[in-house]
Amino acid sequence: MNLGRDLKNPLALRSKGWLFLLLGVVSAALILLEDFSIRRLVLLAICIWAFCRFYYFLFHVLQAYAGRERPYAGLWDAMKWALKGKDGA
Image (cartoon, rainbow, N blue to C red; front, top):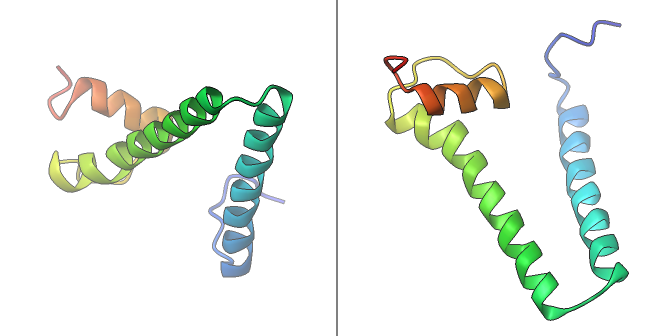
């Protein structure tokens, strides 16, 4: 089994996406069940929204509008490029 290769099976890709959603819902529910408050719910929603927007910024906005010509190797690669910019400065 080669863990370094890309996942290309459509069923496996969809399953992985649904598992991420399930993981997020369960973890958010456990956070809120521990000590529910409207404030905690709102802050958790803002946190999730902000991280989603940051991910979109890294993987779409920078590539489509800031001159990134090749796909990122992953999250850390995208964050390094976002900090350095096109010229590495």
